[in-house]
Length: 453
Image (cartoon, rainbow, N blue to C red):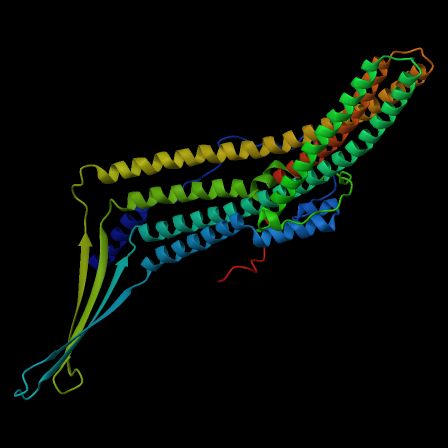
């Protein structure tokens, strides 16, 4: 009895000493303590609702239900979940039943023979090889789940961005209408002065060229409006020709600045960072599997069989077999596999670090871009006011014969250009805010109503 206990103690020390363990996986650098800007307004998981546009909210919700790229990511997640179940099956015994029937010649007393066999096999996971394989599959499934959340975030951002671009294009189209009307009024004024012999005919040609240039830009905007409507339809899972024509309304005001939180909280929240971390954990478990493959494997096989010659399997034969597989010579294959998985783990650690740094940079970039864009819009608004005063003054001088028409044309062209640029700048500001929401956002629940299973 003493020898048995001693053997079990030595065996336990050997098993637990050789079993691969999870490594301590941490960032290869120290994350910053805080971001450069702070606010008290906590962002919602469904960040797009901060803009207060019910029609846009409906578009995003429809896209989350019907977009085919997102649906593809969902099915990839289901596939990864099935892989976890498949890998986990190795932890349980297998059971197989076999049967054979035989009919002999009619003159035999027993002309029918039935034989039934049952086989069960179970591998004892001495070194945690099966467990590590299951863990690796589970981590990859979580990475795929993070991919799905990333796809949902990207889709919501694309819908909101396209929606605002459509509103901006419609605003530009409306502005072109007003500018064409203004330019035609100026043309009528010039023609009246030309009739009285006060100006040259070249001034009429210049004004007509300005009108045609404005119309040309309006036509390009009409094309852009239709393309954006097609994009919204496709993002929502519909054919381009089935797109909805959206009535125009102004771009929304910028919501309050969301709270950025702490960098360490961002690491725990962002799905792309979760993906990189889970791939790192999976690579670590792959190393454990490769190391375990160098150790012996022990499996148990149970066999039972019986035959019936008129009775109901009266005589059964059963046995229990233990199989020990011990790698001896493999030409360095298993050692090379360990090195390969260790190199892959190091690569995943570097990829994880880069993903975290990129996440920090995206937040800081969006913050500074939004701040500077607000300053830029203020400058554009001041320029619009100044150029309007300049145009009014030059137009008055032109009517009194003091200024040349070319000065009036230059001021008018500058004013119209700045007004169009101001609308575009407001769109850029909203896109910078979208980028900030996107950089700060975590995952959110999505009801997959249109997917079977």
